[in-house]
Length: 403
Ligand SMILES: [Zn+2]
Image (cartoon, rainbow, N blue to C red; front, side, top):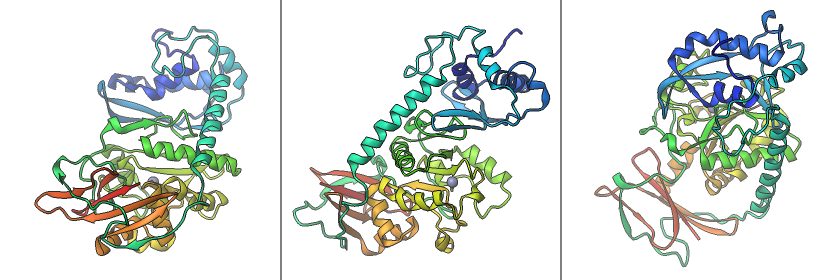
C-alpha cells in the first residue's frame, strides 16, 4: 500500500483535479483508477468493473508541464457525484474515508480541512449558503423588468456626455471588454492569460471539477445558476468552460461532427468567456434542444450578460450548428442590446462597424458605444467616464463608456 492516494475526500479532489499531476503519474493511472473506485465504492467493489471515466490531458501549470486528471464528476446541488455505474455500497466508502488521517497540506484556504471526517455535508452547506447569497445579489441587480430601451445608432455621444478625446495606443491597450469576435474565420489572436481565469467548481454544479472561466463570466454564470435554481431548474451543470489551445485541438481532432466544433484558436471557449450548460437529465449536448431548461436559459441568460452564441436560425451567419447549450459572456448591456435586436455577435459587430456607434440607456445608466478603426495606431477613449475597450478582432475596437 505504499505511495497510496490519501482517501480523505478533499484530498481525492485535490489530487485528482486541482493538482496538475506529474508526467510520471500517467503510468500509475490504472492504479489510481482502481483506488478511486475502491474508495468511492468501498472495499471489494472496485474489482467488479465499475467505470470511473478518467482521462489524462497534457497541461501547463505554474509547476511546469504535466498531465491533468479529469474524470467525469457532477456537482448536483452542491453534492459531488462521481459518474460511475453500479456502485453497490456508498456507505462503506464513507467508513473507508475515516480510516486514514487526512493530509495536512492545504491548497484551498476557503475550505480548511480540520477533521478526519468526510467534509461533504459541510461543503454542501457552504454551497447552499453561497447560492443563497448569490441569489440575493442577482435580485438586487434586478432582472429584465426595469430595463428601458432607447437606442440610437449614432457616432455622437449622448446628451451631456463628453466626446472621447484621449488618444490611446492600441498596442498598449488592455482589452477590458468582452466582445472579441472568434469564429470559424477569425481566430483569437492572443491566448487568454491564465491569471485571468478562476475555478468555478465550488460555486456551481460542474461536470469536471477543473473548469475555469474569466472572473466576470464566472460571476455571471454563478448568478444565472442561482436564478435557474429559483425557477426550478435545479439540475443544470456546466460541462465545459475555458479550453486551452491543446484541449480545443483534441476536441477538434476527435470530433464526430465538426458542424459543432471549431478548430483550435477559433473557439469562444478559448477566451474563457463561454460555457456549455447541460442538465443531468440531458447529459449529452444533443439532448438539450427543445427542453424547458434550454428555453429558460436562452430567455434569461441575457439578463446576466450571457447569450446563446449559435441560435438555430443563425447557422448561416455563425457557421456553427444550433447549440442550445453554448453561452458566451458579452456583458449585460451588450447582451441586452443584442438580445433586443436579435443579433449574434457577428451581426452586432457588423452593425456597430457600419453605423459607427450607438447610445442606449440600460438599467438606469446611459451608455455610449463607439466602434473605432485605429488611426495612426491610436483610438480615442473618454476622460472622466468609466469605460471598457474590446478588440472586435476585426481590426477595430469597441469602446463602451457609461455613467
Ligand atoms: Zn461550447
